[in-house]
Length: 586
Image (cartoon, rainbow, N blue to C red; front, side, top):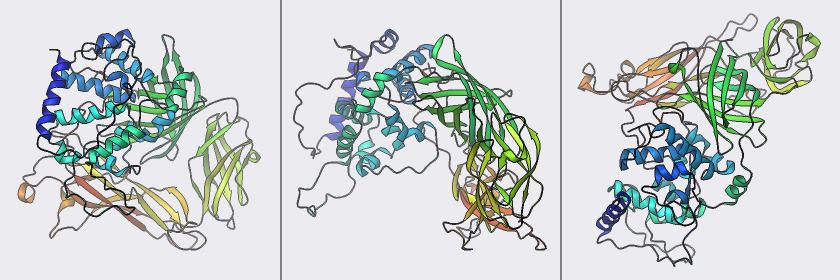
């Protein structure tokens, strides 16, 4: 008996044991005329690496493999699971080739991958799957819904996924798959018979219909898919959480040995501070549009950022996220635009100019900015005049701007030598309020046994707008402002002392670093270093004429909780080109 046969027998036996004595409420399914067709997997490396357990039929279809499609991360996790649970022996180079082939031939079309992009970009968002409540409640007990909606399978494969969970995790029926409450008794409002199927049965029916193996999107994309031609210079614009907007350039060079692999030279500046960053990296494009890369600064591995981006069909724009850390909460939102001969305005260092102020210097970031730029070539609208050009390079121009005392308040478009940036600046006279973003966040203690999860906060200034009232549609966002950060107690219990133990907030940057995990003998009851605190931003305010500056403050709720004790994929933080990834666990 082969390993695969034994595994199937174990799963079948466990299913019989788990379901013995239970009355199935699933309606009988009429047999189909013929088995569902899969997608042949004919690559010799895949056949050799996977063929011991996954046999091929006369059509070149490999069992299980040919009947599902997935992201590169999904295929990577599959290989890691085979190594961890089924004893697969595979070297990293071979594993990379397998992931590359499967991602290209059993991958996702752009229209299928984009709705779940937040999953592979590791964005911490509160996603709600609204298409089917049973599918969401069944799956999110253990996985994010992004992991589910980034897969495509035949109906038979979706059924086998359930069988696999029941085999490996015998308690899953009570935890997620079967109803925990009494049967519904009242008839349906429209008079139809009640649907008495278990949640998992309804979820699988939905997933099989909503995410089938064969789709028009994949048929169309796989017919036109080819290696993306990305070599050249690209304008970089993005956002570094806690620091603000970034602007720069990326030079992409094709690898002569592989049409879908590239090296990158990256340089950018943090607009507000002028901090300059240089990075070099490598990237591989899966399925003709899925960028997966890694870059570092001169500091080496400690500065590494993973790059997950999506290439547009016209090969003129690339967009996504660069991130780091075991929980990936620290990162940059990035957009690349192909640079041609035209002048392009990316943004400015200031997002607001004060009414009546003279000689405010403004840095304008862009590409192909004219070296011989004149003050008259920059137009900021009525009441704003460029008095002189302080300096000019193709990537950044510094100009002195005069703002009259009667300049109208509000957003202004910026024009530079024929190029433009919509709503690049706001004219204001005072700061009415600041807000802390996000308005709540979660961090995790760690560092002893489990990694920490950090939290990053930003302070944004606002003007109340023409109606003079806060939190209305005409409010003017003035962008990031420098504040003094501090913690205050979030009084949830008598004699609360969380603030002493949860961790430290950097007073200048707004980054919270939690305390170590584990019982703390110094704390009453030797409790863990968890709790609730307020994150407070104190802004010194803006003086106006003879009126002194008035301090403004805002706060956000921070929950510091326990480590994430259970992770289904122990190497999920490893980039696709890392030695820790792609079957390196042997």
